[in-house]
Image (cartoon, each protein chain N blue to C red):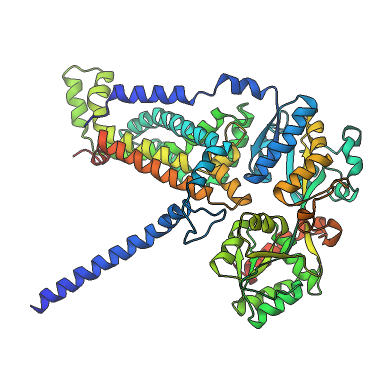
Length: 269
Length: 349
């Protein structure tokens, strides 16, 4: 009986701790959402009246919308580049043996371990020397560089769990390399590609240090504009913009869940 | 539930690619316009709506506004010096001097700037001719009027009051770029030191820290948070930002130009090397009295053309440049690494 009471106490304590932990994590986000609905022209909490004026400000202040468009373009295009390079690389390296494969894998993952600000500066000078200058192409390449490790890592992780026997069986049954890739390998690694692409998009959308160096009137991304705005104007429009970003992220997850299923993002069983 | 297959992936990638293509009009426009720089928010609106509009009206030229900050712009110019992506650079005084000495910008050419005649020579000399100051702020005492009815009127008095426990200060931390001028030199100067002897500043900061009478901010908006949240009552802040915040409805905030004088913070405009010659005309717009007045009314910072006459509501808010203290920018620039090192060792925040 005493043991049962002890178990109940522990369960309650665990539940209380979990709830407190989530409140601790979510409370700042809720404050940001609440502030975005304030009627006054400065950030304060609790809010002093309800208004949607700061959401209108997002539409009214042209750089916000322009930057949002650039951010989405760059996220999708850089992810496409990262997938086109990362998937073949991961497939080749996972089945390779020897030191050179390990070196190549480490090289592809190296952007993860470099300070972004250093990478951004290096890419700025490198791509400028190549004649690409400050352009959308440069920005896409730079974002692809930082998205690539996520694609390689997730695809390689999934592909390592795929038995080579399946591909060998297909080959023995007469499939050529392209047919093996299309009908056997890609269906197996699809969750890895999807997860890697998702990470790549999220990293791109959120990136400041790289985008910072490639900003121009036509290539400024949302984090760059938000930072610059926040440094020189202290109104709740940034909170409203953050709320919109959160809604878009949630909507994206709901769409994925509805049409694809979040559970498919894991490794195949 | 729809399963993602190859066709879906390719369709999505194609749609993304089409969506990602830059409009041809935008590419074409880039070849006909100059690129000028601006900070974000109200600054960008003022630059675009006032200076760019004046430039376009006078010359028929077009200018695109690049939002960001001087370190970003200078890196981009340095990486593309032969064909710079920026024509006109807005800069802080310390980086403006660096930009001049490293060959990123041209010397001001008076023959191409008719409005330069109305700008006091000191605003050219301070940047050694590598540009001209068109706008300035002053770092003085900002405070919460409702929580502090009798604020000190001097920096010395403010430090003494905080040490007595009368209030908590919010001061710029070492990660905030203007701190060497607006805090370290200013405190040293106000407390009996100089640019060559900043011991009084560091001793005061250490004493304030020991008494838990100070918190530091890393960005300009953080100061407003400190006052709004009740973490501090008073501190060192910019006049223009204070009044701009006041104008948004935050009437609890007040500003005092300290007895010692606020610290001058000039904003410099520079012509980038190898940039289009029409950049001179744009700079001329930035120095003209009517656009400068409109700019001052919008951002509530002082401007440099002597023909500008502020309206009454603004006159009381602008600190006359003659009533500010000018830090020895050149000497401070050389001492910043040592001061940062000392800050990290002694203050740590």
